[in-house]
Image (cartoon, rainbow, N blue to C red; front, side, top):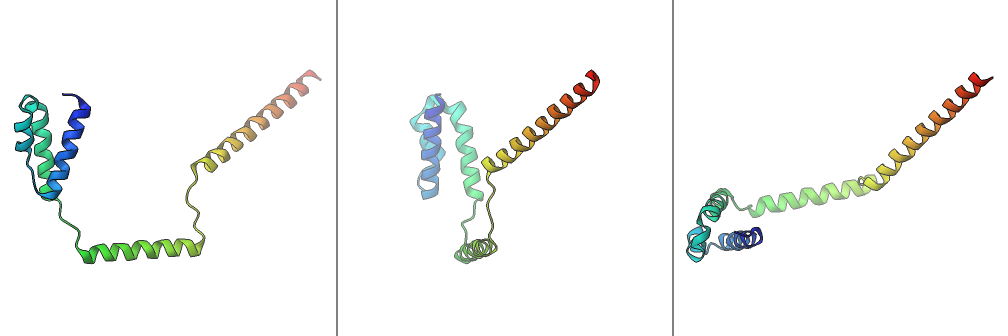
Length: 115
């Protein structure tokens, strides 16, 4: 079966599982030729969905409060998030400095030996 088609079927199945409407058997009845590939994936999706517990409103509010508090503290403290481009720039500048220093030392050593 085409991977794109398989992905679409699994996405539709996941949506239906969340709504509590369809089962894997419904999809297998529609596409009987894909049973060996699709069947196990639909079974796994149903088992995973059956173990997921919804978040209680109290936990949701607590998590929201913690996230907002952390964001406020970071803002007050002046937290600067990591910047990969800036970090790469610092690494390149450091490497360029080390390479330049190596060239200068090699030139001085060469000059010393020619005298």
